Image 1 (cartoon, rainbow, N blue to C red):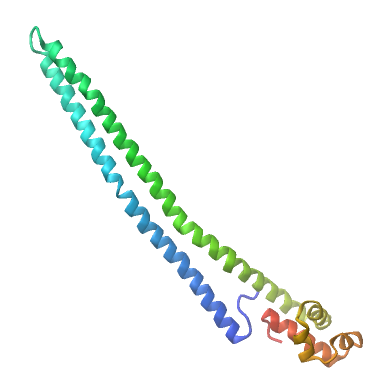
Image 2: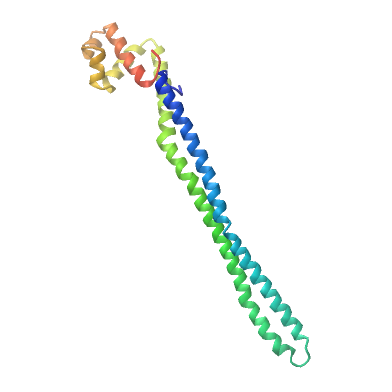
Length: 199
C-alpha cells in the first residue's frame, strides 16, 4: 500500500485532502458537543419543575398531616391538602419526563451532527483514498516483477484514454503485438503515472 503519490503535486493534494478530512471530523465533533450541551441545558427547566412539584407536594402533605392532628375537624380539613398533593406529584413527574426528553433529544442531535459529516468524509474521501493506496501498492509490486512491464502496458491499453495512449505511442496496439520494448515501456509508464507510482 502506497499512501501518497510519487507525483509531488498529486501528493500535496492528497495531504491537503487528508488534513481537510481530519479537520472536518474534529470540527464536527466539537460542534456536536457544543450543540448537545446547549440542548441539554434546557433540561434545567425540567429539573426546576420536578423540584417545584416535589417541594409543593411535600409541603401540602406535611400541612395535611399537621392539620389532621386538630381534634374533631382535623381529618376533614386535612383531606383537601392531601388531595392537592397528587397534582403536585404529577407536576414533578412531568418535570422528570421533560428532562428525560431533552436529554434524549440532545444525544440524538449531537450524535447526528458528528455522525453525518464523518460518514460523508468516509464515503467521499477515505474509501477512495484507501482504494487508491491499495492500487498504487499493487501497481508498484507489479512494476517490480519480471512480467510487470507487459501487464502494465496491457492495463494501459484497456483502461487509459485513447488520446493519452496515442500521445505516448503512435501505434499502441501494434507496439503491444510486436512486443516493442520502447512502446511497452511508454505504455507501462502511463499506467504507473495514473496509479501515482514512480517509474
